[in-house]
Image (tube, rainbow, N blue to C red):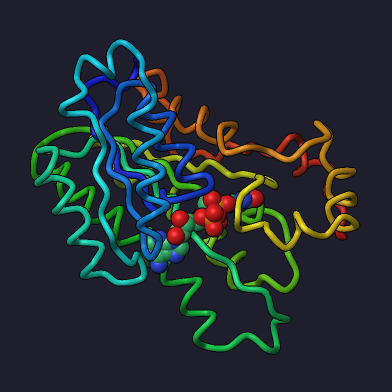
Length: 265
Ligand code: NAD
């Protein structure tokens, strides 16, 4: 129950890693805001999982701690500000922000369209920038500390041909985190990146359905398996807790050792 009394917003939490993070934070006692863009049924599924977390403490504060879902497109600054304002209006405050929403588009560099570039950068970098800004404005206005956790990727370090905009967005996220660790430290606000390797979620559906590519990838992962959303969520829970009060500006890889054993497919 490390997060009792805390309120967390997890962006893009209607499926995949975001859903796993919300459930884990709720299990640790946090009240949670679930954000989705276009799949209310996914957000409802996340909410049901939060409600099923059981746990003595969760049941004790059941009326307050049921989670709350908000639709917002994180490529749109007005919707980002609305998301933060609504979260604060509902729970009275925010303590933890997890910038999880993200997407990737596959194309050789010379064929990438402006629309696809914008789609990736607007959510993965600009969206993270302004969601974090709105969260920090709230913390400064209420004179409270807080924790920001960005879901980055091994591709903030590793090349990924045909996904150049995605790699640029995650590389940008790395410097955003380092810079803000310095700029926000005196406010008691920490910021860290969690960088997954290959996690079994809908973003990897094509890979999961391609036995040859999947086999080659698995041979590259020293721990011999894909990661699960829970593998990412447990690290996020630690970084969101007071156990990590002295940790800021760093990237933590959750990749089964992939980063140190990577060979191009
Ligand atoms: P996913 O596709 O299952 O989930 C992505 C989530 O982001 C979805 O809920 C989606 O609705 C949301 N999203 C996308 N665009 C949005 C927008 N405009 N507004 C609001 N929400 C939006 O993928 P995932 O694997 O769960 O990915 C979560 C994060 O983890 C992403 O940032 C991704 O880059 C990162 N990541 C994933 C892996 C992996 O192997 N699965 C590896 C490294 C990093």
